[in-house]
Length: 327
Ligand code: MTE
Image (tube, rainbow, N blue to C red; front, side):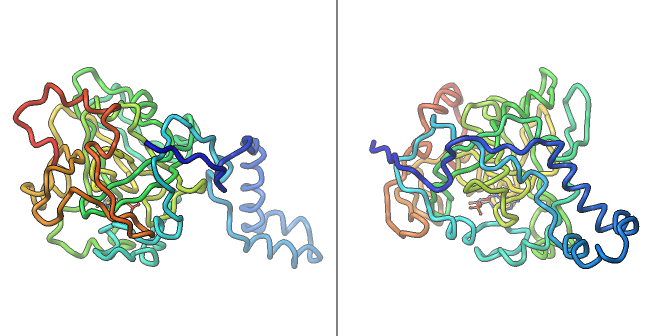
């Protein structure tokens, strides 16, 4: 396997973390200006410059966490996909069934954004997503991504191991699965008018899968906060599974002892199963899986078992019999 080692634009030489209080004070200053409280004290001469400040877009709530340090444990065997392709060729059915939903997705409101933890947990809770992210060990990882539609990409995600999130949630020992749900907002998501689809988008993993080293909660891509079309503010990334498992824009995480039925499984169980592990030898009824088309270059490359991540994940499945592990 050839490793590509070169200096990339988003590689960080050192961390530039803004002190959090400083950052929050700056945000509050801008909010205060917008509300006029500081203007009133400052008098007329300030008016011109402060109203310009007040109109300035407020910084992203976790902007100071980017870029995060690259974790070198997951090197790629290929070039990174150019950012312009990975952020413009998207699947996000809440905004429509085309790949080009970037404009539509901009309507999604990211603040406030609450995540509910419920089901079999020590204590149910609702938390602000940005407060939650700040408690997590942020890092950057490069992963391949393989869609069941036979296209693929290789991208740098920023986020944290899902295991940290599971530790935070404190599931009860009887919980066997994690069920995740995407935002369902009819006002901003035109795709929801397709009433024949089983909204909200749901995905699930076993607890063992959710706590596997590879399983990642991504809050950014290419060293920046996650664009809306890629699943802001937080999404799942399971690189050994077909892309549809990587649920976007998560609002609810439920622990359960019953296997969740995922969105695509509910639509067509004979084509999209719960496990959905990548396997070039198990064709999908509509797409051959032996090869994949690389986004951007359109190169045709062989697909690998578990998308090349078998060393990390194959053991989880060795005792599972009579299950369709690869669809
Ligand atoms: N999550 C939600 N909520 N809605 C979706 O339509 N599409 C899935 C997955 N997560 C989807 C989703 C599919 S099919 C793929 S391949 C990936 O998101 C695509 O991620 P990307 O657009 O960031 O490449």
